[in-house]
Image (cartoon, rainbow, N blue to C red; front, side, top):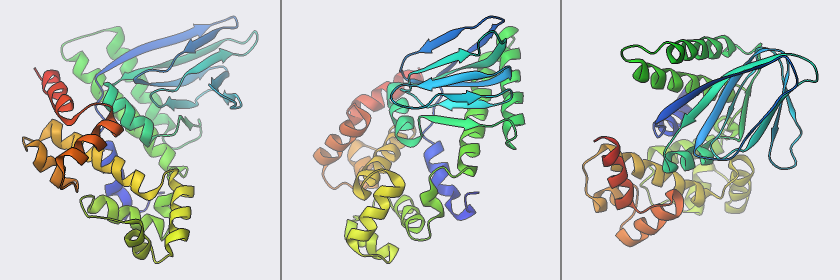
Length: 283
């Protein structure tokens, strides 16, 4: 389990999630079937309620066998294929969480391509119940159904992420040296961190720290820091009335030009474009 002192890091990451819409589906057949889904700004989810289903991702990745009761969440941009066993009936209850492009990009940075929740996992029952409630709301819409559907989608999403954390997602959080550095970076994202300063925080040499950080996180320290800064900036632009230069300062940039360039590189649009798009969503 993730230590409580690191839960603020997780909350910081989850705070950026905004589900725009949900598409519900039920795949059921008594003969072999196959379903292909391309990449896009959505996360696909599901639970196998009957039979056994093969899940294949793009690339040289072995097919994963999903048993009855198994759940899964595929991060945005993950093309995949679902296939039932030969001659065996199978049913999947699932759907898609649909995001805007910037949220999808943030989640693709944050999550592994696949979160697999096994039937015997402690959160599997909660995932199944949430999907059943989603199915009921979709089948018989009533007053407030759209709000309920979006809320339930968020509940499913967080349960799935928590399940993956419990299985060791982001093991860096449990690392006594790198975990402490991550906590410091998130608490003071605006601080003028350097690799040397972060290594000192970890009590490691600069080269050993950089290597260990890259092994656990998959990114160089300052690359990771820039992403966290831009994700925080995105939240401020959506939820705060501060001017652009004030947002830049809040995430550690003295130069508006440098902030503008970094924001567009990470999120694909300029800060101004991002804020205008967020404002249109609330009209």
